[in-house]
Length: 285
Image 1: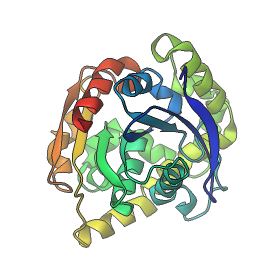
Image 2 (image 1 turned 30 degrees about the vertical axis):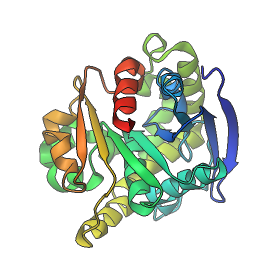
Image 3 (image 1 turned 180 degrees about the horizontal axis):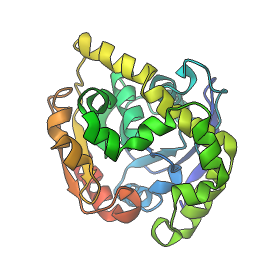
Image 4 (image 1 turned 90 degrees about the vertical axis):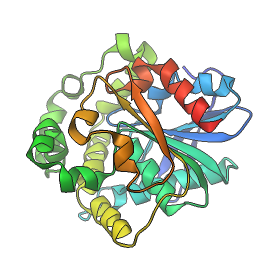
């Protein structure tokens, strides 16, 4: 995987972040979702480099080989604000002041927070298989809770660690024939580590507490996204079924929203990499 990419760790002050980067042109930061690592982009990233972009793939705080502080009772240490600050620091260290950011699943929430908190630095935003956290929490109702019950299970104390820790590979269910053998091996090594599972759960605990509070405060303050937004969603997953057209949801936050459904299951970067790469390249021009 990632032939020709440089792999290194960046100390952000609050975390130690694994990054892979390569390319000659305008920078784009790619952020993975749960329970993946930056390796989920292994089929997309080389295509973006070939198209002339500089690509940075990072493991989120606590995921994969990135490390962070111990969990805190208020979950702030794993908030999207803290993780977005990590990514802003990473891009500064790599010499990129202005950049595009594309996030999938949980990574889309980090990308969204990065665009809100560092608006002067984010020139374009991509949100894949995600809408704002508060849209789900405030409007989802029973149907959402039944479909995405894992959000509320992962947010519980102690019990999820015990359940998942009994057999994390069976719980998460990665398939090397779909993921690719090296990507699968990296994911497998990560989910076998209890501290990674704990950090991934803290991501969800932060999501329903501090992250939701920050989003609601932003809405009350009338904050909007000035940069163009690309919304993609997996047509063989259930986001569109639950929220309707994700572009309509994102237009509550941004004026410039484009996008479409990708013929894929949830992990689109692994299952439909050509379509995802083409969408990113077309969007960034």
